[in-house]
Length: 288
Image 1 (cartoon, rainbow, N blue to C red):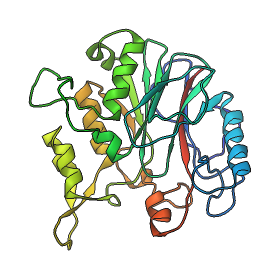
Image 2: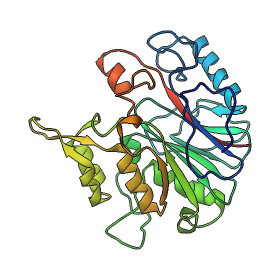
Image 3: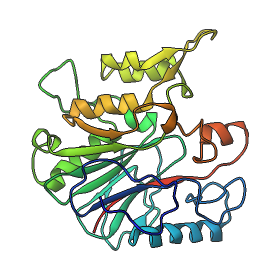
């Protein structure tokens, strides 16, 4: 991927084999105008920051990537929005996709996992917001697709829902599209910082029994048990179940953890969990 100009030095450019004409970036907390505790590049307009600062920060992002990022109202659900140039910001969805040029699929995060998709042969890109609720999805329903094995349903979380829309926009079946799809996982809360209850583990195991190995019991906890959850590992499991094997980015190591890198990343659990406030970063993918 050719280098883009005017990017703050610590913004992340995915290292993945994106096809010609596909660009992607992940912002950090550097490069904007917001004051503490949103310093400096807060892109969220719902976290208490000064509206003019958020608008200025969004314009900084737009100028840096030379196209318009479309910001969603994310609700930890599974809604998917197909973007066009007349799409307004603030529509409710937790994933978006497009085949049009110069409009950026944009996901805001501050601990949740951003997942970007690109097809190697067709001009389709997508982005998804994968917190644990969106990732596990609602309870299984009768119309959930299966991958040839009734014991391993693909699930109906945000990644599965977004990928089905992605495959439809490509114009082929999911199995065929998966083999030519690449995915990139951005920074998120790491597996040594994401404490969850037993009910979260059970919800993931209900779809994929193998998910249980991605939850490590927290020592010294009284019942009900608490676990450290590997969010990027859970996303990789769900993507592989879809047939997507070319997965890049966040491997669960410390460098990708939003909680443990306060100078680089906003973190809701680290900052807002104690009654403070924090900003939002963005993962963007677009075609030129």
